[in-house]
Amino acid sequence: MGCGGIGGVVAAHLAERGGAPTVVTHNLSIAAAINEHGYRLRDSGAGRSVPGRATAALPNDAGVFDLVLLATQPPQVVRAAEAARAHLHPAGALVCLQNGLCETHVAPVVGADRVLGAIVVWGASMPVPGVYERTSAGGFVIGRLDGAADSRLAVLSRVLEPIGPVEVTHNLAGARWSKLAINCAITSLGAIGGERLGELLRYRFVRRLALEVMSEAVRVAHREGVRLEKVSGTLDLARIALTPADVSGPGSPSLLAKHAVLLAVGAKYRRLRSSMLIAIERGREPAVEFLNGEVVRRADAFGLDAPINRRIRDLTHAIARRELRPSLTLLRTLYDGSRSEAYAATAAASDSSHAAR
Image 1 (cartoon, rainbow, N blue to C red):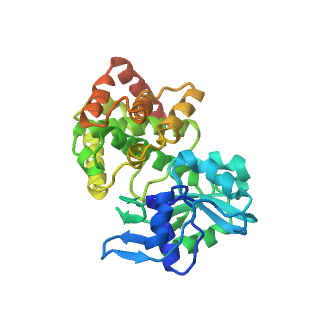
Image 2: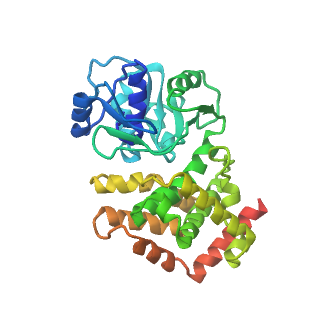
Image 3: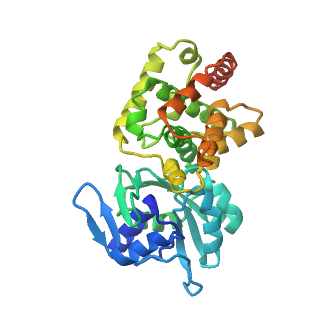
């Protein structure tokens, strides 16, 4: 369900293996391009076309499925789950490939026991309908949000392994929150800045904003009792979160090391362009409520503050309404406006609480 950058690459690999997946996209131009030309892949080698079909709606006679891969943008995930519900085998599962905590949004549709999560640890884009470019290497982290063992994970692993290495986790919540914290920074700042990740993270003030965004998310995750997992086995969000020394002393060795980590992230994913920005450019609803908005809502529930995530959420909605235009200048305005003493006090209190843990 869904055939943008991620969905298209997944569908193409499944079709290439002869699996004949049923592929649904509500975008008529994407369906037409695939049906005429197949999935046109651009990766590290020469481009190739994989024969395949796509439909604009799931046919009533489509039958039942053991696995339904949800690869829409987050704002469309519930609608996609509802469309697939009648075709899901009683022992089958919906699989959330989106960023954020979409499992919690899909669970009310089919029941939490019929929802699996698959964190996509690679990037892809669709520059034009039906053309797919994988922008970074990687695989998947799969599991259940409640951490329980599930025999369907072995089946899902076999389905996804030809696309990239698969890791099964019993702490999907911790992995999801870590990825959420990163996307709250990378995806949303990319939507506001309007540049590719590598270009944005060259700027120190952008890296500082990213650290502050992630620190707020880490704080909320800890309040929820989540044990954060390392991203790709190396990026430790608990260690990246700002400490009191980082806040009060801009030249601290700890802070310099964290900037170095973000520079490395920018170098690895330098070609990555914000999926949220692409959605806005195509006139679609941005996923900011499933990223920064998720952090803000959960922070509010705990009586915490998340001022940077709140500002980012509001700015992104303003860009989607065409009231503002993405630019590095707009990012700089966000940074300058967040340098208040009130925010510094909030950040210090947050980090002191984190340090106590």
